[in-house]
Length: 194
Image 1: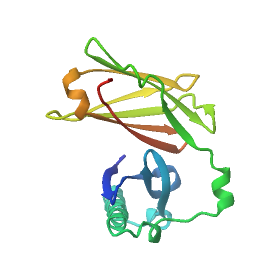
Image 2: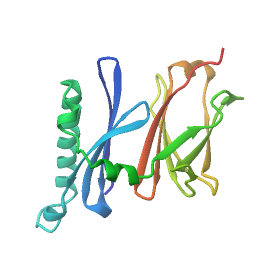
Image 3: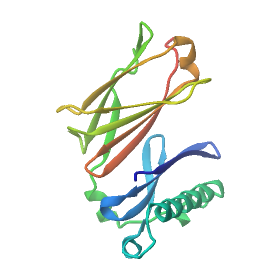
Image 4: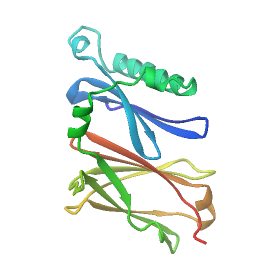
């Protein structure tokens, strides 16, 4: 079973996006914190020892992940985020290739009631061929719309969503890219061009 949690929380003038997921292949429960689309820190808890225990399954993993997610949210609200995040060694951070999501056609996305977004995913500057992108389009008065795309050999992907232009100023789009175990999340706010 795949599960996770995504929450936006504001502290002061900063909006934090908190994303938690079970990383089954690594037997980790991981929570990442993003500000303006950049990961500023993580908290990871191994469940490797518990995985072999009788009665430890998806429900227990989900509950643990929910508690970890809530711990990070509470720390942000209290201004104590640094107290709960893991702090890897600087050398370890230097070896991590960063996953980036670029919005290529931000100046022109709506034509004939179709919202078209062209994105490019890169890892350390190189095209992330085969990256999986998940989109969550939120607009007032309607349930969120989800869709997925896979990046081509140049790291590019495109989505089209039918939408009324009048709803764009109050809409937002959350894009999550997954590539070789790494994740990048970006939130785009849509507005009418002037």
